[in-house]
Length: 549
Image 1: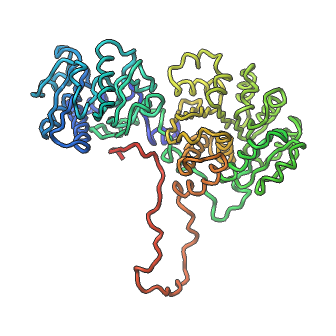
Image 2: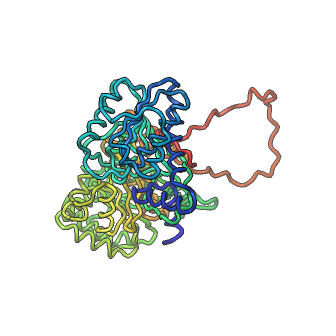
Image 3: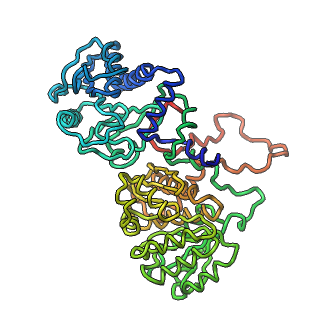
């Protein structure tokens, strides 16, 4: 495993249930008692409750029989010491508590009652410590009744704070195991979990707080997590920047293959996005019947006549081209299949979307074999759920996968390509096992043409030399961030136009050579008259707070 892979994996890792268990084990083996970790976890939850609700509030801690319940007992003790009226509602008997959880329960001197849905009524705050992130079975019986009671309490105005993850959500897959708590706040430990960010689990978490409980970051080197929360920490250091003495030919040349005269809009959106991504040049490879409309509406994009797969092969033989995108507006059929195979026979990075994928729905093996034989590597597929199902739905590896993360990874292995599986919880998967979850996309992105813009961004970044995984991950985040900035009323054309502001938020601007001349004398004498640009706007995911950074 290369150092580049390690750096990507550790940039903002998300830990599966098994990986988090290993982090605990390694920390305890290194000399930190498990009881200390539990004490720190419970105190952190109490700290959050104390920040949001005043002393005297009635708090009901719903505790399960495992370590999550032990965290709940610690939370109750700390809140009671601060003047809160805390009660523990225990699901199960004290005899079922083991190890550190039993010790935490023994230190709690306040009221403990048998879990009963009626016990939650009238609480100001409900602390959900019933199940942890490892839940892997449907919720039934008393636990189900307690979760439903917590949901009802929230509807009645109580605040719900989840310990680690809302009970009922699988921490690795994000699946709701029949029924799940809907929290206002979730407090997780050391690092986030995939289930915090994958749907539908993400919708249950409320505001997420990642807190330090004494697990050293050094354990990540032993665990080697393979999933990250996508963002500039993952790929920012590799985001292309124009060289001081550079020129447009050094910034990459992207090609977008256009459909016929009546379906050029999608390819034109992709081409403009490739330019906005930073490619020095972009060419639309256009059928002759679409030359006029493509040339008239793309002032900064070059247009060339390319009719059919043979012409595309000859066109792409030009070594100055660095990346090519196919799919948006091409149409489904043999002609598109031939164009895709022609592109894959060349030595350029290839991005395939929409019709380029659906054209192989009846024979995906033909596409996968061509990708595997692609001499340059660097192929990215950007399907939405429907396109993904048409291309991969027949394969057991995909049908049996238990989460979007695992489905995307299975697709990447089958296709020998990076898969960017679009959606509100977009997942980027590499065939080497790396995965990233993109969580900053707003619902405004659900609009015609947004996917075509994303294809162009991936292509523009690929043309500048980013690897397939990094280009896909960066494009997904930049695309979503642009949508957040534009907001309500967004149409696809707005996304490309927002890119300069997004780039400014993640990249240090070029300052030029150091000034050597004496600065001209200023007329401004009073400092209060000097222009002030005001605070700089920053972009990021607003609903996550971390105490590890």
